[in-house]
Image 1: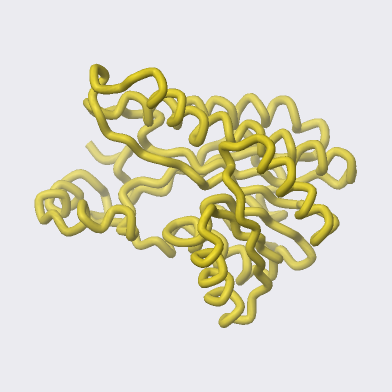
Image 2: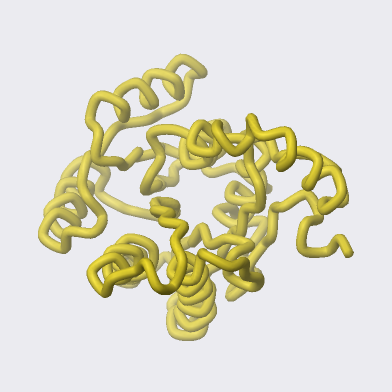
Length: 252
């Protein structure tokens, strides 16, 4: 039911952290995974991790916020793989500052990477999926910062909220082509990026009180939701956001 054998998946921002765990999850279901990031050396290390498990993986380094780079990378993917069945838009940046500290250029950068880049990649992927005529899967990694908010995080919250809205809109537009578009919204995960925050005992105590499971998420725990949405098991699921947050949003 969850097998991805014979499928090719492109995952942006997958050299480490949650992106790498998503790639591992798809590779364990027999997908051929194409890892993306800007650091070619880090990508090759991630490829080696997946191959060490017997998975099929390769690197495709490009900057998702640069349209010319995206177009060239997608042509290279066509040349190497012949078809793209699954796109996972995971790449994102975070910049926690107050409303009055953000200049317009800062806001544009947040939107370019977190919203506009996924939009353009969805378009590139959908064009190929439609031409092939066999449908496809798009998974956008949003955030619990979309439906809820905290002070000092307006730009990121706006971008991730926009990505959730884009997910629903593209589900409506692409469904007739057999392409499902869904999202995964992570909560608090103990990744390399969050290492400093995870080391703060006050945050740990907050999560004990604030989440149903009472702890940080382990990075590997994101993989199942993405693998499900990429598989035939989710063939009648589209326009949905699966929240993977240990019960943070549900817990009063």
